Image (cartoon, rainbow over all chains, first blue to last red; front, side, top):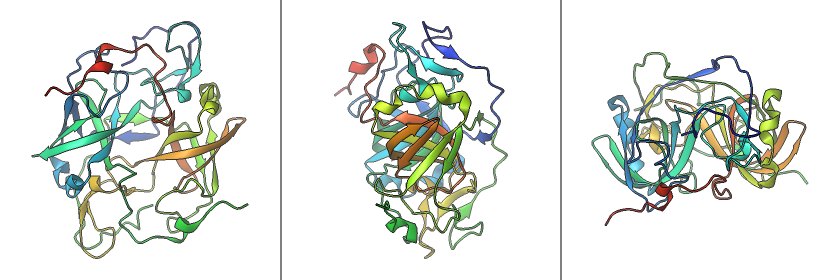
Length: 165
Length: 165
């Protein structure tokens, strides 16, 4: 999902110790039609090809109630991406942007987020549209789309806090 | 950010080996007005209190160009949350929902995502509104809001793929 491991003009990498601040547990796998980085779209589209999320069976019960949502948020681990670039030249023309000003898969913690359309759930498989990642990408979270979700727990004092003028 | 470590009625935890599939590197810290879980709002609001993102200096250059965005997406690690619940009872009334049908901080990989308003950037500090997490929460990513972002790299064949009828 990077464009290869070589630096383009004016890109800048930094030296980093191995990551060790917290550990992820993959909850499943993303199955898409895209087998190489060059095949993947730059951005998913809600009318794009159907993709399948293959959930680890230990999490099946955690899907209860998700079928009520038409759009959901996915987090996945872009395991092919390097993590040490601070400046990137996405157009290969030497003009650079900071990593945090891009939605490139190359980032300190290569987590992709997408809002996708949930078509159906069948025996621990979720069928969705709107992804743009490689086949076999590890899945790390599934949430209701924030725009469609209303907190289920009672509200708290902080919910009413607004800025001071 | 959980409501404590005890299970509520009908909640269900599962046995899990320690997480070890991938490792995160914290890129900074989130400073908010909320010192306890009970103080935090359930959901951030874009007219809520100003919060500060304190970035690790090694990533300062990675901010270049981010100032062009009015809204940005943040990912952070909800380090106080348990990770083993498949069913949760958010209203404490015994009615349960699956973890993936909630935006609760209790999840297999406790990563919070928020869309926040970027007020300004000053010497590696980002001032934002719209957060709802505890003071001291580790930051793991900053991205332009997907709605405002246009890919900078040339498009690829996959960008034109739509569903087959």
